[in-house]
Amino acid sequence: PSSVATALEDPDWVAAMQEEMQQFYNQQVWKLVPLPDGKIAIETKWILKNKRDARGIVVKNKARLVAQGHRQEEGIDYDEVFAPFARIEAIRLFLAFASYMGFMVYQMDVKSAFLYEEIKEEGYVTQPKGFEDSHNPKHVYIVVKALYGLHQAPRAWYARLSTFLLKHHYRRAWCDEFEVLMKGEFEMSAI
Image (cartoon, rainbow, N blue to C red; front, top):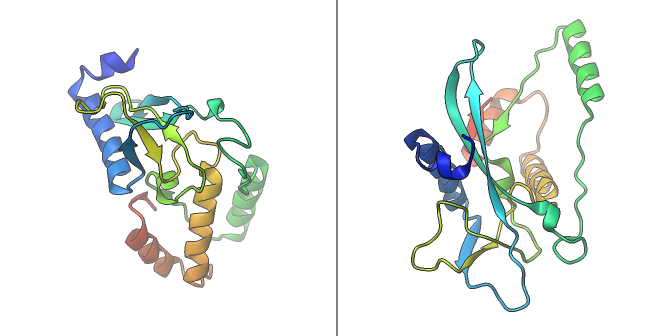
């Protein structure tokens, strides 16, 4: 769709947006509150994309709600943001080596991964367009857990996943057990 307003007129897009909002409620990401004096709420934004199959046919509408984290100020809205990640070259090298050695490679996707971990900084975001509370239209959400777009979100997810893996004494050979553990702890969209 060309805009959120257009998407809100299409039942399929509304369903995709409601599914995203349901994840926020399931994970208790935020609480609706009046904006405290002297605080600023970061705008939220809908990212709307079509998921297509191999033939290019739309199979699903995907709506993701993000905070416009580029408006956050370091030292005020967040402190630490470092989270380790692999560069694409390292991933390609790993996959080439795994293929050469005949290793089985597993991939996983944690649905709404960033929404699982609490953040320590106090932050506020605006109500999403199309999903404003009719009883409290001027209220904002205080963010309790990480939200896509916030600078501290990748670090929060890394902390959550690391804690989970260490708690379960993760060993690479335990792929089947790992899959069961992950599905028990997180809502998985694919493994």
